[in-house]
Image (cartoon, rainbow, N blue to C red; front, side):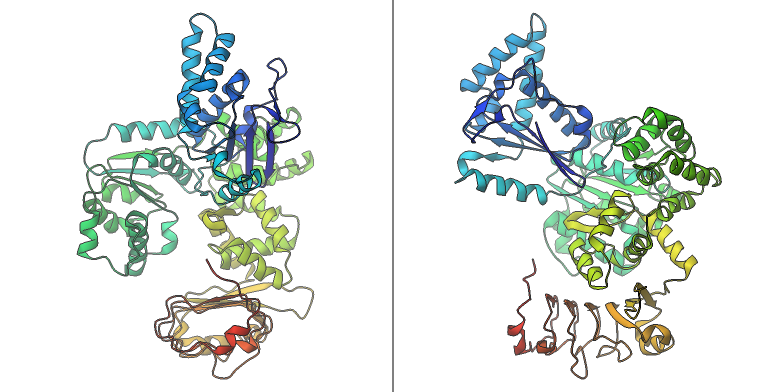
Length: 619
C-alpha cells in the first residue's frame, strides 16, 4: 500500500504487487507478511485509487481490502477510482480469463466448506462494484507518465461535496432517511432535516445526497441559501441556479416554456439552510416537478415545518457521549479514541460541548497537539460558559490562534472573502503584506474555514456570525449595508485590512467623506456594488489598489481622468450595463486578470490591452 497525504486529501493506492524496478516488473505480496493496512487510515481518506493488474486476484489480502474500500465507499460516499494495468476492465467485472481462474483458485485456498460460496460472493460483489465505477485503462494512454498525469488532474478536480472528514454516527442517520425515501409514495416527496446551528444538518443532507444522487437523472444541491437573502432578487438567483443544475440552461427570468420543460422530470433537490422567507418558493417548486421528485430541506426555522407540511421530518438530536468523544478525538488526536493520559481531560471537555458536532470539531482542532496545561486552560474556559452559549465556546478557538496575523486573517475572510477563490485571496493578501499561504492553512487545520467547490473559501454560518460579533465588539471594522471596500495603511508595522460597508452606494461620496480617517489611507482591495454614478468615486484613492471590483452598477467610465495603477492585478467590471469603454491599460502594467462579463454596452476596448504581458486567460 502506498499512502500519500496533503492537507485533507489522502490517496490510498492498493497495489496487488510491489513495484520493484519498472512498471512491468512486479512481485506478489506474501500472504503471511502482507502490506500493513489499517481501517482508521481509510477513514481519514477522501479518495481511494485501486490498481488492478493480472496479479490482483492472486492475493486474498487485496480482495479483502477491496471489500473494505467498497463498504467505505457505500457508507461514506467517498471516491473510489479504479486503474487497469495490463488487464481489461471486463476481466475484472466478470472475473473471466486468467484473472477469473486466479480468483477462483485464491477463493478455494482462502475459504473452506460453507464459507466458500459466501466468501466468493463478497469478493465478486466488490470487484463488480469497483469495475462499474469511472476509471482508467492503461492501454488507452501512450505512456505511464501520461496516465499518471491524467489521474492526478482528475483527483485534483474532484467535487468537494463531501459530507464530512469524520462521519461519526452518520451512517445510521443516513440509512433512516434513505429508508423513508425508498418507501415514499408517487407524490413529490419533501423532507425536512431540522436542528439548531452546528448540529450537522448540512452534513447529513450531503451524505444522503451523495448516496442516492446516482438514481436521479437530474439533481441540484444549493448550499447556504440564507446567505442569498430573501425577496425577489434572491428568489431569482435561486431559480437560476436550479434551472442551470437541472436543465443545464442559463436564463434571465423563468418562463412558461422553461416550466413546461421541468414538468414531469424526476429530480433530487437539496436546499440548505432554508428559512420561512423561502416557503413560497418551495411551494412553487413542488408543482413544477413530477411525483418521483425528492426535495430535501435543512432548516433551523421551526415555523417552516408548519408552513410547508413536510412528508417527513428528521429532527437532529445532540450526539451521545460516546459519539462526542470519538468526534473530538479524531480532531484532537487523529484517531478514534483519546490518548490514555488525556482521556479524563477529553471526557471533561466533551461534557461541556453539548453533543454539538460543530463545537466538538472546532474545540477538538484547537486542542490538536496541545499540552495538558493548554487542555486544562481550555477546560477552565468551557466551565465558565453556559451550556447553551455556542458562540462563546467557538470563540475559544479564535482566541487560541497563535498570533494576531492569523486572527486578522480569519476576520478578513469572514468580512470580505467568503466565496472567493483561494488563489485569488492569497494573491490579494500577500500583496498587503500578509502571509496568506500559511495563515489559510492554519485556519483550515483549525476548522475555522473550509475549502468548497472550485477551491473557494467557505465558513460555517455559526463561525461567520461569531467573526462578525468579534468585529463589532472590537470596532476594528465598520459594517453597514450595501457596498464594501478594504483599506490598509502601509505606513507602519501594523498594516491590516479594514473593510467598510456603505449604507447606500447612491450616496457614497458623502458617506466616504464622513469617514475621512479611513479615506486618507491607502486602498488595496476595493469591492463596490450597485453604484449609481457614471464614474468611480473621486473620494476613493485607487492608485495603490491590488484588486478593484465594481460590479452591478451604472458605471460608464472607470475614471474621469487617467491614473497610474502600478500594483493593480485584478480589475472586475462585470455586469456593468452602461460601461462604454475600458480604461487605458498602459497605466495598468501589472494587471493579471481583467473581467468584463455581461457588459452589453461596451463599445471600445483600449488598444493598449495588447501590451499587458502579465494578463492570463480566465476559465
